[in-house]
Length: 461
Ligand SMILES: CCCCCCCC/C=C\CCCCCCCC(=O)NCC(=O)O
Ligand SMILES: [Zn+2]
Ligand SMILES: [Zn+2]
Image 1 (cartoon, rainbow, N blue to C red):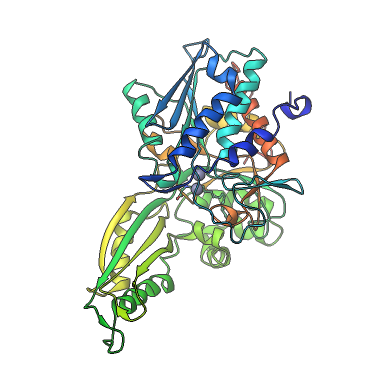
Image 2 (image 1 turned 135 degrees about the vertical axis):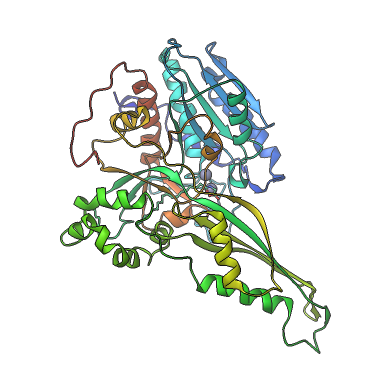
């Protein structure tokens, strides 16, 4: 039964009010804690059944994150986990059609920071559960819900603490579902119909701090090179020399091969024979930012600091570069390439944060998570395994399960990917309701004794 058919009370207003709470995270210890506390109070108020049902335990972890343990009636069934986060990246009003914390509704879309990343999941999960509880649903299979408060600043105090707590309790999960991918509509050149990408891995990360020191002095008698000039040149070299193309060496190979039949002739033939054509295909895909992120380790210059006054030559210039590492590469290799590219000893390089690409989750008919998705998502959309191009809290849970999936059933059109962390982030009311519906179905599907064998069609790639 579809939730949206009969239920009015579980619509988008609960998300809209959550968007208005500015739970912004700047750096690890720079969070809007007042907003985080307000968010906690808000969910308690609007999801009373979740917080008062006797078979659900709720705990606050790391001061602001939430862990819910939903005790199923059958302890023999291995539990699963749904993960989301309440924090958002900063947003200034400039560039937005509506203020980023206004949750303004326009032409069927709710605008605001967090509508896609990731209050749609945090509120959506609780909304689906609240509704099930109000219908006196008691799950058979136990599950956990984690709502982190610092995912945007690495999740060490929220998501990771939840994972460590569960690990200390000896919990093992049959699968975990987090944010990180969606239904792409018109994003992949050559495919006209929407395609659901379920990310079975996520890219690694390397953030470097680059520093150049030089003698300070009067701007009227400048040296030939300043700290700013030296650093800017190094940054520019990194931007002008992208990391090598690795298309075809990671799980994106399987993704495109499986998608082959969705392309029109002659692209379908080309995609079926990537062993031969991947060099040319990767050159086409890399032309757009989202495609480029599938082809290689990406290089993003994100912070630049130098100078305090127009007539003083600064002593120090510093900058940050953020790499997202393709599954076929490792941190050490990226670091070597960076050093070779900069090739200037005056640029001091320090590692701020680094981890390798995440393990690849099972993608076969035996895996419970895969069976559940196939049943829950869509006979309507083709779905394939993919790579999460960003990072998620789920990476802290690798000791609890090898089956980590990243997916929201939200349609992303060509200009939507850049709204995430950018201007005019938005979700359609219809998509939000679809997401709640998806979670409502998923929780119930996890309780089915024997899931029917998936029927073979191009929709089950
Ligand atoms: C050939 C085209 C393939 C395009 C694939 C693009 C898929 C885009 C789908 C979803 C958007 C990416 C969401 C990533 C979620 C990241 C969550 C986040 O912000 N975490 C923090 C961080 O990464 O810094
Ligand atoms: Zn996120
Ligand atoms: Zn984010």
